[in-house]
Length: 128
Image (cartoon, rainbow, N blue to C red; front, side):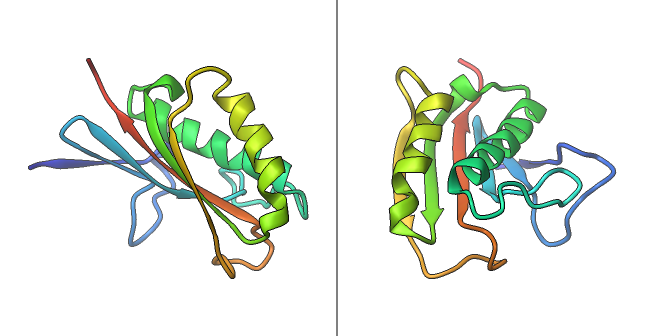
């Protein structure tokens, strides 16, 4: 089956991975971390602010595929600190106030940069 890589910023393509990949009618969004499009950390030590940035980054990839956040069907969050779960859950509820996607949360020992408290990946179904 053919696949199509999604790059929200056509001038900034990371090497070795795609922010999103469409295969069939499913969009797979790579784990998004709390950085801006320019690579600046958002939220410092605040998981709540970092989670908001992760979801903003997911939305950029989803929108670049022609979909919306309403098309997101599954998310997985990776949290470094279990005590940050309630802050993450509040942001998830802000993002999906009604019938949200299927969701998993995994507690881990660390992420690619020590200042990252959270990473979130997503799947979306495209079209009808």
